[in-house]
Length: 306
Ligand SMILES: Nc1ncnc2c1ncn2[C@@H]1O[C@H](COP(=O)(O)OP(=O)(O)OP(=O)(O)O)[C@@H](O)[C@H]1O
Ligand SMILES: [Mg+2]
Image 1 (cartoon, rainbow, N blue to C red):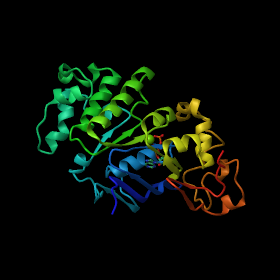
Image 2: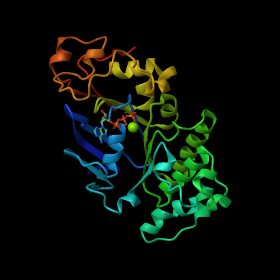
Image 3: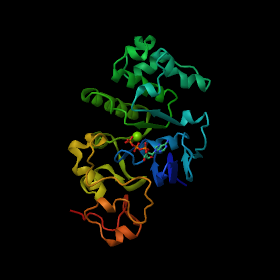
Image 4: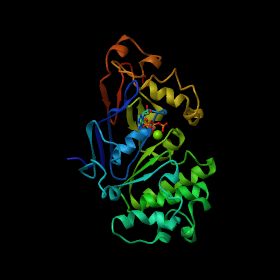
């Protein structure tokens, strides 16, 4: 019925920790169509990496469903690597420091019983093919991330998840990596689920944006609409703090007020305690989903159209 490549429906992930339960994903629904880039943004701890891990089958859901290329993701089936590639913030997360990098990029092929040329993959990601014999520590940060991207793309999966792929890189290198991702998409037509704090890169890359807050997607829609005409006060606050958004990762002060304890059992809107528009209704009732043309949001008192 649907042409979705990835469909996350009402996904729930709970972590039982000392003092309570963290609902890292609390009813998250996201769709990615073929060739599309969907960005997931939101402050630290809102559940972005948990979402990525769930799509990769690394994080079991306590409720909901994830479907990739029409098949439900459960456990960690080996064939999943043919359907989804992963680029982490830290390339060392996917590169064995003791292996020559040429071996690392070929490993996904090897595991699925195929052969390939590491030099060719290196060329695809803009690396000198002679680097295949190097070890990760003999490359720069940007080169290592290119190797990690090459590895994620080795099986030509239709979906590639990037979790803060440029956060650890210098600004000048960041632009190169983003351009590489764009070029790759143009040449092989894959989709990206692009996770980032950095709204500038999101605007550059994404077709659609999902804004997460405390385990929920509070607003979702086409990138330009989200950036120029947000509905959810949290999206608006996030955009307002955009020039210093990268600092959000480290700064003690988020856009408005403080993120509540994730173990809180919420009744109303999760953002109510920080929201300048909050009314009694927001504290007492969970906001319903409002669908407006191509976008949707969860808010009792949305920001008015300018
Ligand atoms: N293994 C775990 N055990 C307990 N709690 C966890 C675990 N992994 C994540 N959490 C909690 O789940 C919530 C979501 O974490 P997650 O790492 O998905 O956030 P994030 O949006 O990726 O944050 P960041 O931007 O800092 O990477 C946080 O409150 C986090 O503390
Ligand atoms: Mg994360």
